[in-house]
Amino acid sequence: MNILFVSSEVTPFAKTGGLADVSGALPKALKKLGVDIKVVMPRYYAINRESLERLPISLGVDMGSLGEVWAGVYKGYLPDSEVEIYFIEHEGFYGRSGLYTDEHRNGYSDNDIRFIFLSKAALVLSKALHFKPDIIHANDWHTASIPILLKTTLKNDPFFDKSRSILTIHNLQHQGVFHKRAMEILGVGWEHFNPFELEALDNVNFLKGGIAFCDALTTVSKKYAKEIQTREFGFGLEDHIRANAYKLFGILNGVDYDEWDPSKDRYLAKNYDVDSIEGKAVCKEDIQRFFNLKIDKDIPLLGFIGRFAEQKGIVLLASIFEKLMQNEIQFIILGSGEKWAESFFGGMSAKYKGKFGSFIGYNNELAHKIEAGCDLFLMPSLFEPCGLNQIYSLRYGTLPIVRATGGLDDTIINYPEKNSNGFKFWDATPEALYNTTLWAVDIFKNEKRGFLEALKRGMRERFSWMESTKEYLKVYRSVI
Image (cartoon, rainbow, N blue to C red; front, side):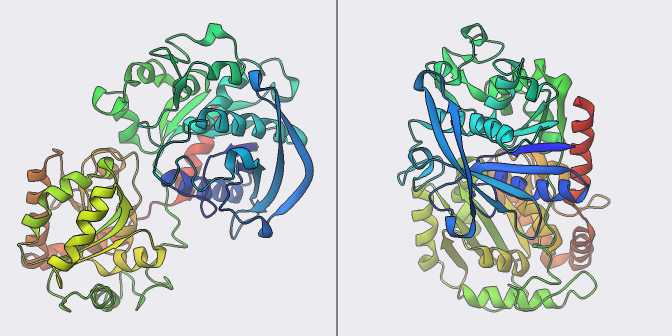
């Protein structure tokens, strides 16, 4: 099976969220199962060309009303694998400081053109490499043009006559909505500018079009596949998704346990595992010392790692923060995003010195240390297609406190149910988050045996990419 996998971001080359994690891990797992797969992404300014091979080919890409636009190509490999990854080189489109936004977090005004170009260039590259794909796997709105093109302008192209498209929705909130003049650059007929395909309130909606034209639609957890068909989580596309639900599959993301494994994690002060849990106390002391917190193994230590964005429940967290800090707890936050949140949490370190620590930004080593050193991990997301930190937390013996949505609901079983591995709340309210957090703290302090049993159950669970990959293969085969 030949698979062309196209994504706007891939770990470790460029990342803003979970899309990059999936794009960096799923192709490697597919390769292990014997699939011939090639990955395509932009060569952003931050990606160092020195470690890549410049290919002696140029791609002429038909950009509709803009005419033919040319691109170069670089080649590399996903780390620790034989998976080839190709980088589309165009300084005008990708030689910028950000992936999608400028330094002020404003979306680039030509994002429609940039990602139509990526989608079209990937298809031209496939021909240049003489790589005839059985499956072209597109991801989110950035590459949703690919299913559209395959069923319209390329439907009579003999090179792609047997190619089928898969579109994965990683986050429905971002849909790629632009002025309808993008139709002239996409180059498909105006008959497709209708409410059942590409049109949305007189604009072009790339994700909507991709959903209509793809051969199979997937998203990153079973619960999220159901949620996006409702008004609460559908972001205006719920009716459209229900109409295409016959080809919708929910497949939970996996985790790279080669990187996230406390028994061999090089960042930890002491390695540990479910049968030798003692090292976790050393990791707790290490992270307490890093953030200048009081060294005390009996004080419950809470952690949060993530984007400071409304989706992640940062408003809920900020609203209960000072009330929460009146209790006998410690709290650590690692993240960045909305400026008000960076300012708020950054300033609280001084006010609650010895009880609270914050690191504004992202630091991979620190993320590993926090997962290992904390007792409880907060994920109060308003919606969460899959989520990965709750799975990392389980592996590291840190019980998650989550809102029961999307992949969080799929992976966490509420205490004290049979096989429980964490704590849940349902209402997206400050009260629900506060009460559930204090409940989890109380269990940590007063039901130590039950807490330890739930902790060990979580550490034994595995959400491997290999299982998820087998589900993707079933979808691929079903459309072939």
